[in-house]
Image (cartoon, rainbow, N blue to C red):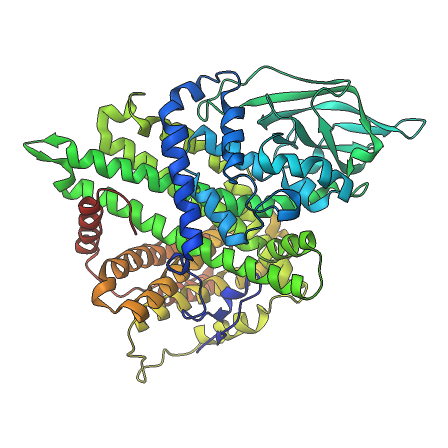
Length: 597
């Protein structure tokens, strides 16, 4: 029974779960324009020319060095890709600004500084500031003349951002807000000129303020000594009767959560882009090392165990990239539609990102974990040398770990993925009931045989469709069984999230390769078919494992047996020789000497 319908237009957020997408309408990295390719190349050249030669100096927090790099990046327009031209930026589309994050993602601590500046350091004022505020601050942030930072986290409020204790009170004459409290883990905090800081007015109205370096009552602590991203300035901020001009209130009183959470949607997607950029650079370095390092009178790149590691890293990067730019195009299209409908620029961008908040959370989790896998296996390929600071892979390994923590921990983002899908269904934005009921009926029926689709990629399309059915079956039964208590069953929610993550990424990868084969032909696309089949094959197994853990956690007896049988039916993949496929992928990497997919 088919539980999805064909569509040829951009989907709504979460709608990929119940609708089938067209490969022809799916945006892929192969669709980048010549200008977009040039922007990405410019970013890579900036890293190799300006950043990589001085990474040791950067990691020692040499005074003035990171700010000077941000100025140089600003001079080349790399800080203003997402900012309109009338505010000093380049006015590029969402896909191009995402490409900038990917292109600069291999810059170690610099990547963190530039992402914080262009994202959470600039976007709150760009999207929520008054015309006067944007004219005063954004024009300088776009060029790097001023550097930006963002103060949300506190010692006792990390994931629970609304639990912040920093307070703000309007002075008797109405001219100032008086802030008291502290913020921690503030990226760029040691040198920023402008800070977006959150505090509660009168103890309960969570609001945002624009704070400038040098304001009375505003001080900062020493640089934190961190495990990784050592060259990224990270300090605590202290506010002791800090006088903030009333006109520096950002947005509306009591609406700070709107600023914080909307900016996070964009930040999560951009973090994925940067992580994938870092993963590509780390893998390229690992391939190069494997080609030159000899053991037993041959390069270690010739060993099957090493080829597996190289290929699997490439598989995960390729898959993550497929999902990233599929989503970026959806956001871009939604933004354009809203602008054409008369919506202001800032409202269009934020609404578009909010529409695809589910996908942004998925991308943040997947991208950060792809980078972790790539650098971890990279250290293993380097062996003892990988544990030495003499080699870049050790820095990449240390730096990668933070990505699973900030922009919302991966645990929080997994929980949000399911929570947001269910809330969209409850609000009538996503019709899950019909497809879920269809899957329930299918479980009671005998599988149909005959009239099988014999088209190319039919087996892969069926596998993705069935993965979607498995999610609807498990999630539907869990909600029905647990009702309002489901929010307390975090393990089950994270199992369902893992099923959703693997399904979305696998489908994105399949659509990309289907489109590629349609344009280039099967023979020319063989290694890409290998990449897709390797990912899909493992994704089905991962969905099966997560589904079993969830079912066994809430079902028992006949219900449990029936659902486990259904899960087994829905998580089958056509057997294929993944060893040979990975060897072909690895051989391509070795021949090119770097990641080139």
